[in-house]
Image (cartoon, rainbow, N blue to C red; front, side, top):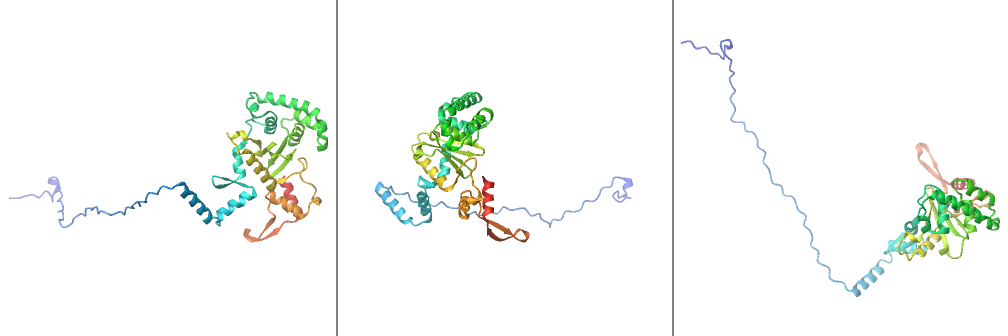
Length: 313
């Protein structure tokens, strides 16, 4: 009997490949999960504090103050309190300019904030906040100022302020300048301290600082420090006096608005150095070497200091 193997002769039938046997000796590894122990941080149990009586708290505070009296932080606070630059709030020394920021009031107008600060000084902040049309009210206020200044023109002569120039600014110019503001303050007998970029100019300074308005120019706009900005502020007078003392000691006081600095021959070298320190102008110049490295520092000469001051103002 003849048997045809179709695996060798596919033309006589479908070729069926012989399957390869599976090796039983090969085993596929199966991943096994191994438990890992993670250290757990235990919370420390603190004993409950014992109730503290008033006498114990007083004694503890006294002992703490005595033990910490020689630390650096306390010495800084004491120095700040003695210098008048800082005040103590909740046991911490806070610089007075930062503390005064809560009293700062910026008139909510588009332009001529200097005129509206003058308006608030004369009529009060309550009337200013009731103004509905600022354009109409500003024109009315300017014409009223012109008429009033004409009756007080004799007060302007000692300060060498021209009446015609003041009237021209109020009537024809969209903004008033500091010289016009000075004329208005003199005619209304106002005491004002104007602060701008570490420079101050005082108009009608009085012996009682409680009657002095503090006006400062910040980012191109004038604003006033007003006690009514903080409700129930009973320490406004103390803060205002400390701030006035701070700016008078730390900032440069200009003698004249139109010509704040005199000729260079009117100053000694030390005078210019003192002005530079108050204006925060470096007294030395850096000499650079190769590749921008600092070689040395050299003190600026008198003409260089004077030029820096003129550029600053």
